[in-house]
Image (cartoon, rainbow, N blue to C red; front, side):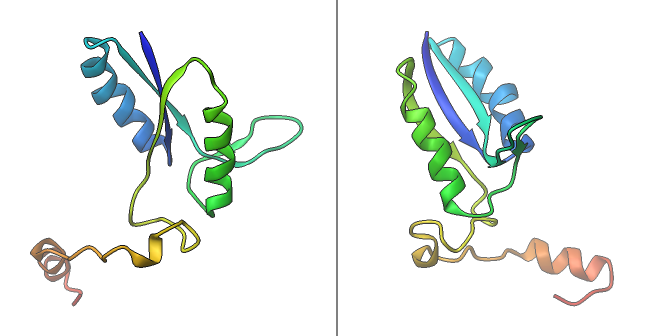
Length: 113
């Protein structure tokens, strides 16, 4: 089975990989393995994980994953919304367009958007 390391932003993306992608890809001989971004490493105790505060933390984890000789592929799954400005290419990406959902939700709770 081919191992695919997926660096994910947090628990939501980790659950998506485990609950949706793993069962689907296992049939094709692919084992997607989610790993949450490490946001702070400490000498003792558990490291802090989840949420991307800057690209350096992502880069550090990606470099570690690329050193895994058992991995056939390394990829990422992050929310576009929360990417920090120092993320390569972030400032040149088109901004997502809002749909009517935001307007309807706001009017439903009495707040103009």
